Image 1 (cartoon, rainbow, N blue to C red):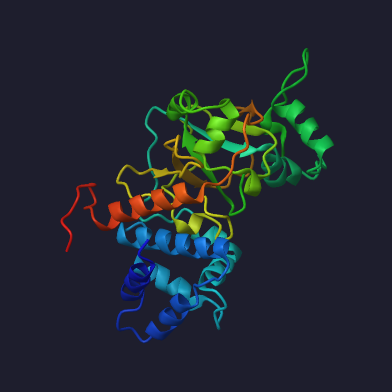
Image 2 (image 1 turned 30 degrees about the horizontal axis):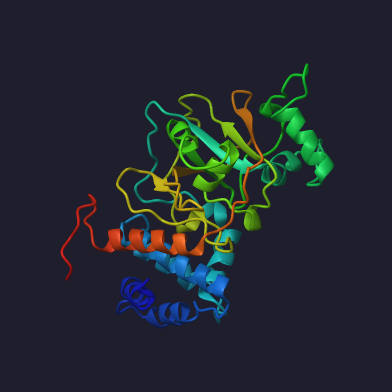
Length: 319
């Protein structure tokens, strides 16, 4: 994936002739791992950062200031940057320079596993005392998503907790693409949407896959095209940057039979209202596993598109 070229590109854009150039060089030189999975994370981080800067989603001066603020010496530049961003995540999430994006007539949904729903939301309500064990997961599923016959589904607004994720942000997808996703590919609804969103059993520990639909024309918070700062540095490559002037990111699906799905990100909500609707998509019919070769092929294609196209997506001649 032309890693040496990307490293040189970042050095040129971030260091230049400034007095801080040695810090940038040291930081870039430290982004190296001998372990295969860690190396893939390193390269994905470099790729995502390069696309953000080249396409103008993040300003090079802004990124430079982050790097200069990192504690030194660097053990691994990706890890150092990730730790720093995580500690100050409310400052750095949802910072795409193109600003908030309009939804028009569509609405959003969030896909997450039952385990994540408890970890990041239901389990945060101290009055509920939900734990991520098998018994409590079934209780949560029955209460908010799939009540037994004769019982009513409990409103999500009754949970007194922040609606968030690991980075205090939430990735969402457009409802308009949901039907096209589930009509293509093999397997059941949960499997298809899980693959499209880039889930895999090793990372997500999938039991049930859930959907939370946002209210129609929801405008209580701003939505952004995601950048590398919105994705946690330690996650095995799931987030892959996307160069587009459409105002949308795009997932890298777990397998090549799925085109993935558009995505945006927003900051956390203090709590949900009763207008948010929970839907149980069920258990995936097949094991969802990460396909390294597919991920690398998609990453290479996006990299080529970014560095060999103008900002309207038109192909440019090689220099």
